[in-house]
Amino acid sequence: MQEEATKSKKASAVRRLRAFAVDFSLIMTINFALQSLVVKLSLLNSSSEDPLYSTNMSLFLLINSVFVLLLYIAYYVGFLRSPWRATIGKKILAIRVVNFSDQGRIKFHHAFVRLIVSQTPMLLFFILIIVINGIDYFNGENVRNNLILGGSASYYMLFAIIYYIAQAISIKRSPDNRSFADKLSGSVVISTK
Image (cartoon, rainbow, N blue to C red; front, side):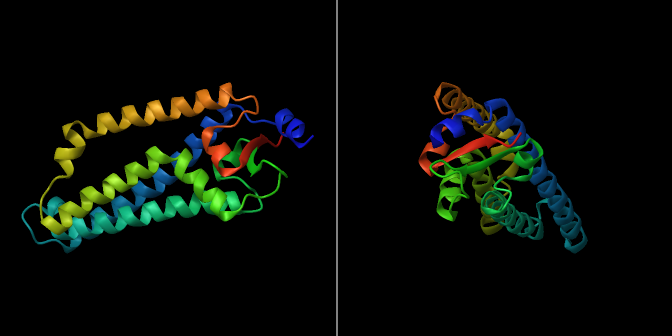
């Protein structure tokens, strides 16, 4: 009986993708604003010939990268656990994440599992940036341009695109419109309209 209610209110893969785009844009806007602030602070505090690759810049970028990763986790898990049961993007697109069995709010560990599985490319991206900035800071090397401009970003983007296409296909092929992240976390994304 509950499955029928869930099935009739399922959110399409397209609406879910649009919600992700809103959330991604919001987080990246915050990230770029913080990075701009970091660059300005680093330039003010730098005395080296090339301030963009100074130790201060590497340290500030490392701290910023860790902060943005934690912000992303808190944003995603916090909003899914909120009374909205949705991130800002999901709220705007009138969809929400609920427990599959009783349509209630998902538990913290379910929201966290859902984040890890559904957002693997984003989390790997943030971790990659932390590693690159950590190498820059702790080794005093400028590997940032070599790794990002040297082709790693292209491989990462290809992986992310394939991963998200696989998720969309899993949603389309599932009789209850659930991705593998939904199934592992015991959740379902429903329409509120």
